[in-house]
Image (cartoon, rainbow over all chains, first blue to last red; front, side, top):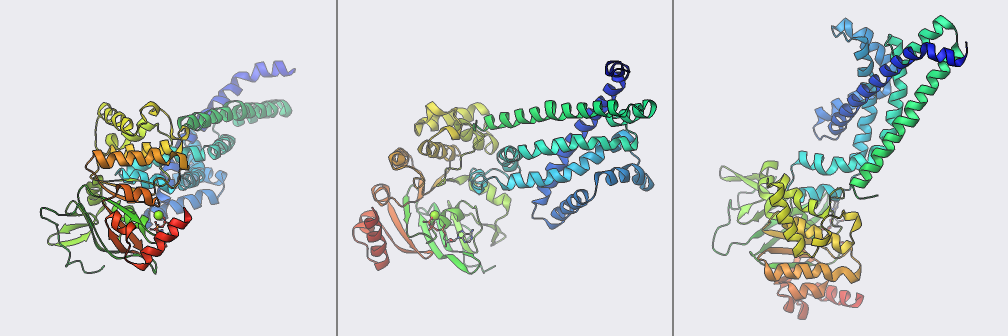
Length: 221
Length: 271
Ligand SMILES: Nc1ncnc2c1ncn2[C@@H]1O[C@H](COP(=O)(O)OP(=O)(O)OP(=O)(O)O)[C@@H](O)[C@H]1O
Ligand SMILES: [Mg+2]
């Protein structure tokens, strides 16, 4: 079978897998950003209980492997009465895992904002919440965007693991096709190229654009 | 916490000061930075604070801006306690809510401007009025444009701070503080980070505020000539206390304390 015949035959399956991969990535990434923000801020709290729970979350999810977390969420949580559909379990595990890394990025980005910005915001009598939201976080975001670009690529690559709980993503489809055709080189080669295109030609340029956009908003460019 | 029973709940009377430090103490660990400081500033008065590095000048302003807590004594603004609040007939340390209710009386300009880099000049001036005072965007813009006009920055109102020189940034920072309509303005070495040739554009704005507006001002400065020109009173700080104070002509022309004489002659030599 020529590569062209091969591709035209399996293209629909590969595309449906790619769609699932992109969906897993997007949902996982949104959850990551939300958790990173919440736990990053919690870790900076002076309240020991709040700070403590953030530390526990970050430690657990950074200190263990994503695959084990995925299996826990999909196979073990049902034993405690929490049953997630495999598609949901996939992106939730991804988000929980990457959120722990993101929380540290958020904290680092916030701490890198000069003290004078906090003081100037206090001097115009802003509330703590508005000071954080309107003055500190926008600047922290610019500080941490480059690191977020890397994390986003990691999230994308990490989505391949959801195939292990039978979520029909790109990797899952590739394995299925391989099992019925034994055309390993073609199929995994194609999957490789698709992941590479997603990461390098879509995600990375988008993050670069976002960095530039934010820099312009700060009048830095 | 020390006993606050000797401090009044209010300072009343015709000539009650706009700002009043009463036995204010501030220490970092064992380092005492303000040592039972008493300082009154009358409404509309311009007081300059001078003194050697580390004498506690910046600390005085930071305590008044409530950027940090004091360790003893009480600060009053406009007759009412700032660092404390009345609970029954006693004073207790201020809650965040109390601070937020009282802080709007005070505005501050910093040595390094601290403009918000992600906002243009006019947005910097609108941020407080919109987010804190609840003005509409239109009202806040009008107020901001008026103040940028006052500091001579109207033509740069849509520029980000990174596009402005130090002197221009400091003038925007003054407009930003004024936009909150404070009763008391604090200036902490606002010309120290500036190139010599642009110092004048900032001092001229402060001169204008002194002559045309009835603000109470407390200014830390190393520019003795400027302090002499525009102050109603000059305080010489030494070791967290006021070593000597008086009208500028007297303090500069005829300093009585030896430390003041030494400091002033050292400064003169440096120029
Ligand atoms: N956060 C802090 N922690 C510990 N010590 C501090 C802190 N802030 C200030 N100090 C100390 O308090 C003393 C007074 O500082 P302050 O900034 O008020 O001096 P200053 O008179 O403004 O001096 P300068 O002319 O150098 O600005 C200094 O010895 C300083 O080292
Ligand atoms: Mg200082």
